[in-house]
Amino acid sequence: MTLRSFAFDRLSAIAAVRDESGTIVDTNEAWRLFAHLNDGSSMSTGTGVNYLDVCERAAEAGVDAASSVASGLNQILAGEREHFDFEYPCPSPSQDRWFMLQASSAPVSDGGGVVLFHVDITGRKMLEASLGELAEHDELTGLPNRRAAIRFIREQLTDARYSAVSLWVLFLDLDGFKSVNDTHGHHVGDELLAQVAVRARRTVRDGDLLARFGGDEFVLACPDLQEDEANAIAARLRAVMAEPFQVGAAEVVIGASVGLASSEPASTVDSLLEAADRGMYVDKRRRRGRRDSTE
Image (cartoon, rainbow, N blue to C red; front, side, top):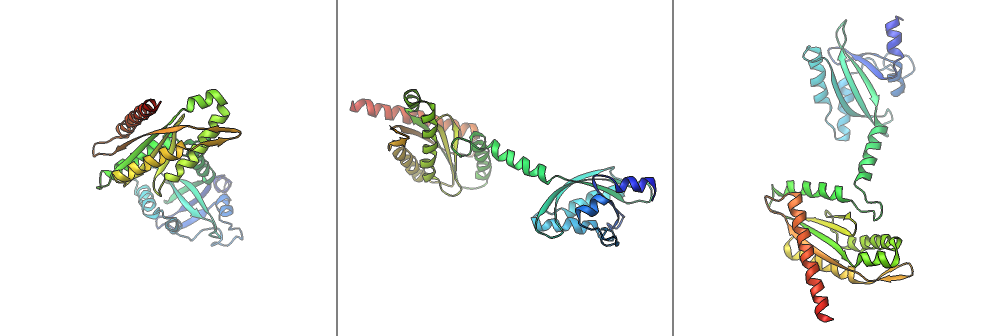
């Protein structure tokens, strides 16, 4: 074994060399361990297998990796590029789980072919997905947060531009929440917000998004909704929030003001949220006027 082949075999990266036809002609120990191929035969070392066949199995995960990988690697063989980086899912030998691999490739300087180095990034991808969920999650109520609401509305507005349906946004603000905090303490206020979220969920259809926007403000985004349905949801929100809440030993009575806005072809996330926010303040003044007139 030459010093070069020894170094190749001891690389920590999962490495293989493929020839111009795509056939794997050499693998290192990390590749063989990853693939559970250790008996020493040519097939068990991974050689003789077409690399693109490995990529094609990614189609089982809904990822068409083979065509893009073939194009990139062939460009290296043709001297059109010096390296090619890509990611693709790879099934375990037992087919019971999937790994996410990050691959880097470069031409072999002598003898032709392409050398491929792989790093298992499954853990990193899982962590990124987990952090992404946390970044759009409100810990107190368990609802999506402001960031998630904005992303959802933006996506729905993009879809609405190509269809006849509209997106309705309802902006809800609790009436009397500050006095609850002042009278009973923030721990009661936090529990109240959690209970508000539970009640508000009753209004959510499949496909809607209910989010805590911040403080005592909530946003409900409803795709493909008619105006009378939007008004009915707003009325239900006001009704369920007017019912007394039992928070520990305290009975808390609050209310909710709700503003509504529907999307138009030129709507943006900001314009739609601002319109719903203005509607909420109109509703709050109207409700306050009704209370004053009965006193």
